Amino acid sequence: MYYYIVNPIAGGGAFDKIQQEFEASLKLKKIEGEIAKTSVPGEARKLAKAAIKKGNRVVVAVGGDATVEEVVNGIVESEQAGVALGIIPMGKNNYFANSINLSDWQHAVNSLATSQVKRLGLAQVEEYYFLGSLDFGFAVNLEDRYLKQDKLNPWSRFRIALDEIKKTKPISFRLKVGSNYWADLEVVAGSFGNSFFFNHPNSFSSDPNNLDSKLTALFLHPFEKNNLWLKAREFSRFNFGSINQYSLIKEKSFILEAKDDITFKTAAVRFKTKKLRFAFHKKALSVIVSGIEK
Image 1 (cartoon, one colour):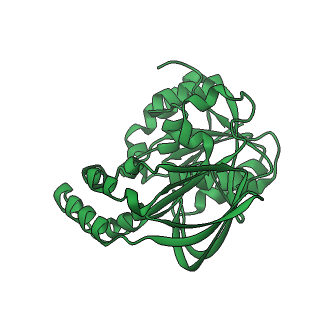
Image 2: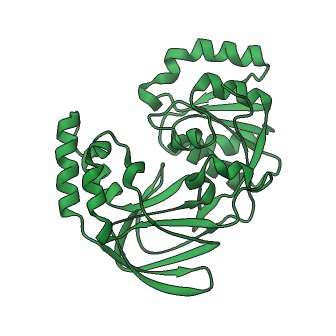
């Protein structure tokens, strides 16, 4: 019933260090299952589909946000009803796991055993699905610069962050909000995602069955750019969630159109496009969340 998809390089190889203890915990909680390790990016998506085809109904992503996102896409593409997503955080940031109060692997294993399931709205861009955020602008550009240079110390990252803030230029585009109106916007940074991801943990109390009725768009406008200078040290620690985007729009769908390509990023993929359609997937996703106190 349980199938564990492990990214062995997540968190600097965290899983290999605790594998024996991890397997013993699964046995103790009576939630053992097959463990499969990925070897290349994108493989978790294929493994999830294969696991479901074999009859597994709880597919567990053991890794970071990118691993979770790949498994989510595999579950959706399987088109099999009654499948739940489990998460064991092993990555560097684990933003989504933290948003459902799964802060470490031991707590996540205990929560998996309780099988408390929540139905979460699944954000969709064209034929790609995610539970976290789709980002563009300053944070994506800064992360690209970090990734291009190996072994940067905190002071070097801080200097690069200051330089990127100075160089950052507004991105212009048109945004259709639901079926209501078009807005012409200029922003320095932006994020799209389900409302739950941006509003946790209070979102749990809004609706026990489906936590999201609308998507959220967050933007940082040029006149708010000074806020970036105050957060430069946070950015040097890869904490891009501290951007504090203030302009917020909630609606069931968005269409973005621009004259020039914009680089967008989720946890697992990056792509460039001049136009995208952002909406909810027609079916919510069952996710096993924290059902116990730490």
